[in-house]
Amino acid sequence: MASLKDIKTRIGSTKKTKQITKAMEMVSAAKLNRAQSNAEAFQPYTDKIREVVSSIAAGTEDVSHPMLKEREQVKKTGYIVITSDRGLCGAYNSGLLRETMKLINERHKSTDEYGLIVIGRVGRDFFKKRNMPIFQEIIGLPDQPDYTDIKSIASTTVEMFDDELFDEVYIHYNHFVSAISQRVTESKLLPLTSIGEEAEASAPKLDYIYEPDAETILEQLLPHYAESLIFGALLDGKASEFGARMSAMRSATDNADSRIGELTLKYNRARQAAITQEINEIVGGAAAQS
Amino acid sequence: MKTMQTNVVTPDGSVYSGETEMVSVKTPDGELGIMPSHLPLVTPLAIGAIRIKKDSKVELIAVSGGFMEVRPDEVNILAESAERPSEIDITRARAAKERAQRRLDEAKRDNIDFKRAELALKRAINRLEVSESKI
Image (cartoon, rainbow over all chains, first blue to last red):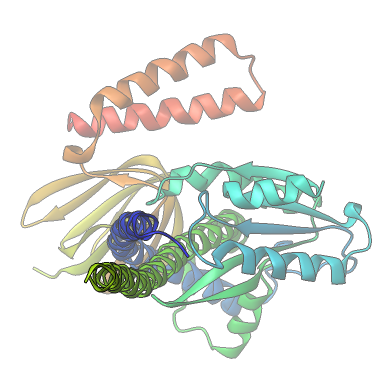
């Protein structure tokens, strides 16, 4: 049985761990708030581009763009995987990476058939260790990323699709459902087929004048739109990261609490046993003397 | 006087939102002025300044490319970055200008770096001009 001093030391160290996890929980809660408001501030931008693009696609029939069309043969698929730089956020990274690995193994036979674009240190290390083809990586993004932080990786990815290096691009990230729930999500980034479908469903609302013409505008607008979708997924992923970290730290704090309770009980029992034993020894000693 | 709702939005949030009397922008083909009840229009924007006129006062916003969507009672400007004069970091813009000029001197024409440096120079000059409200 552990000595009284041992138990006391363990209570002390558990208390200190609890303080740290508690602080991390609160920090994550504050960051989550900011990440959520960033994601909200960004929303109007994509919504507006989407609206304009789908109204162009709906209003003009003969306009087509390679980014809107499904390619007949998919030779190579790109995956953008958004992970965090640091751990201590529960199943945030492991769940996402497991799902990505599963999908890649199902879909592809060799490493020639896909390429990875990884955001976040955890994901990069994971794929590097498995010798998977990483085309681009970015680590050390700030907690509140700006559009400029992601701009170069986003535009290179879109260019890779344009150059037919990739025939499809998927994006894997944790979608923010609520502070305690994140869902691993795969969405198809390129080609932008969903816009075409949406355009067919909704009749054009306004008859726009396109200056200089619809095709030029599509050419400039679509890469922007694809880039902004990547940024949107990143913001969503960041919010999820803080949510996941917050709930992971909250359960760590709760666990520390119950551990402290158990240890205190153990400590008191041991203390009482020691006292009882001492009394017994004194009584026994007195009885022997008389 | 008739007004229209004007919004300037970037991926990092809204920069301007309010009722205005006139908006003038720079497109790749030249300057364009929009007043209320304009026909619906979509056009790309060049690196330049947006001038927003409200209560006979003119406000400047520096934009680095983007789009403008016009409706009869609404103007939406979507830009990769947009800053009001007070938000512009002048020292940073100056440094960017010098850096870009240096690169232009070093790089050969018609390679990608040259184009990048040229764009960076344009953005920096635009920021500086807007911050000094020269336009």
